[in-house]
Length: 277
Image 1 (tube, rainbow, N blue to C red):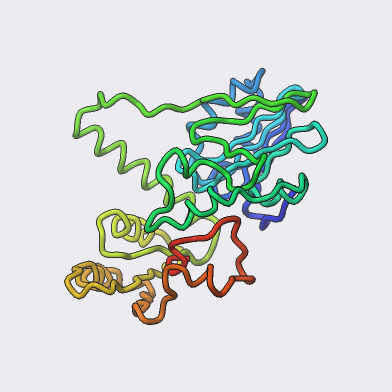
Image 2 (cartoon, rainbow, N blue to C red):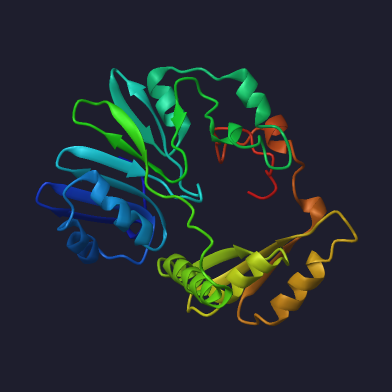
């Protein structure tokens, strides 16, 4: 149950097995169905979850048991709680809180206001809503037929055994695949162009595709910050993209959303980086 665009849902069913990918991916329904034919238990989806390109929630029913998860990066998160004795999961904690009548933990709410990146780990993995739990990265939620649940870890960081040269090739291929998944589902894609190496690399990878690219650079208040210089140099080498530069004075302050509210884009917790959104 939810609201997605048609190009954000890939679903397949084979016998008693069903799965849906909610987000962006290059996987087709036919390819997903082919993978489901070899699945016998929710644990058999580990390889599938680690190998599919894109950014999405994975929800599957395997022989009557449900497996649900987000991404290791937490770009897609999952939260869960008990509603009338049955485990319910959602991509927003407030959805579950509204069903259970859960209140807010004021101490955890205050931690969300720490700047610039919010509370430190593992406190950043705790929901501010009482009775609502956050699924940890690299874990999936296993909901049994009787409504009870458990969480299982399916991903751990790989050991640093790969030499530099093949490691560079593997990282490059992974980034290219991820960007291709994002650019395959729309006519326009936007990307941060801060001037740093990470965002710059992604912009140049996105520019290889036919998708219209719009880069966004939010200027720093520090006159000694060299990011704007490097962002401008990179923009000159991306002539077919549209480049949006946001002056520092045009962005809200750190606590602007807390002070003024933001009814157009409701959030489950205060965001210290309101200007980024």
